[in-house]
Image 1 (cartoon, protein in one colour):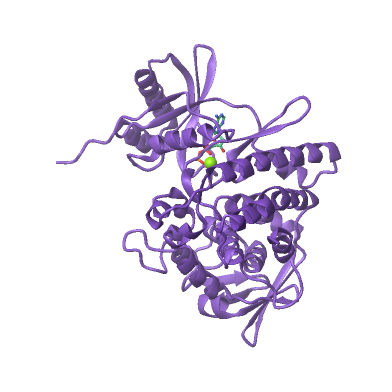
Image 2 (cartoon, rainbow, N blue to C red):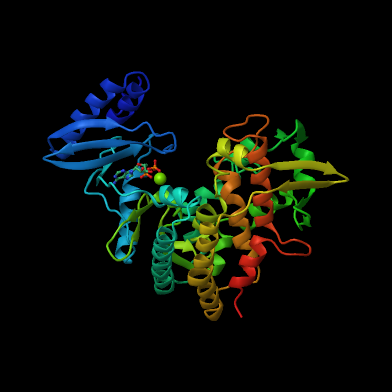
Length: 431
Ligand SMILES: Nc1ncnc2c1ncn2[C@@H]1O[C@H](COP(=O)(O)OP(=O)(O)O)[C@@H](O)[C@H]1O
Ligand SMILES: [Mg+2]
């Protein structure tokens, strides 16, 4: 006997061939679940929204956004509801659902529809802009959010057990992408799928095998680094074991606050940021991990290279060479002025006082810089396939070379000299 498909699973299946039909079915389902006169339901075809099937509808003159997961998962949507509540109760600005269905197989969340831009879209515009006033307002909104993040982190900091750390969903963004989900074997997951044993393609028809690439000593724009790509993944696998990350305590945090999960609300005197999509939020988020993804994705992933590989190859250049066990990468890619300002805000308002506070509480591990560096390194390498060769996804030889240059310089310090990451770490070092 086969189990019948749940109604959302059936809608997902129909949506693949007949969008109109799926929309009609979903409209009927939402009417039924929420007892609402649902009208004009549209499913979004957003290539960036890999996790949820979502879209808009209206009812009694109000506009709504709905989402449900692409995969069948009992806990998924209730999880998001509960996690939004954790953040809101701690006083952080976050969207909370107005309707929720938790029926098995029919977990749907409904939010009031927003017309604000996402902060990622606004900053994308500002990367190339000279509009000082607009940049200033964005920087102030970021500063204000970071003051609130610091206050929440301080208020909620508490010792956590290895088991409490393990139970946090944030590990799905890091450690669980390095291992096989079923057996726990390393290498596995996205790491193995994207990189291990693959052939890589760099500019000028230059190809390298994983063995060679992963063991080479990086030399980026003339600076030699301590750790190879392979050493970084191995270190990440050991140090990012969920249990080991309990050593710096836990806090209430969103955990995945990249700016495509942040609204930009324009006000009269000033503008304001608000979170949404808190699927990885928690009460016991390891305290050094909470702001790592936002630090990487809102600063070092831009301009362009991580999400707009096609434009990257038009705007920037990069070259790669392998010689006597060294991987030389040269590129003219650099942070834009607005990203530099975002980094300064994050460093001065969040990281520096936060590390000082952890130290004063006796919760700052000796290797804190490595813990943060590993998270910065894993953010781009495990979110998207940076390989432009075998099994390539969106990246091309130039954006791939830039990507590995950025990730490798996040992962360890130059043997001598300074780069953007070492200046950042020097600026947040507790006294
Ligand atoms: N309340 C809302 N109003 C309008 N659009 C929304 C709303 N919430 C999310 N979206 C849009 O849908 C996209 C995906 O939503 P998100 O909650 O981030 O789901 P996912 O889990 O797929 O990342 C967002 O990037 C945003 O553009
Ligand atoms: Mg999202």
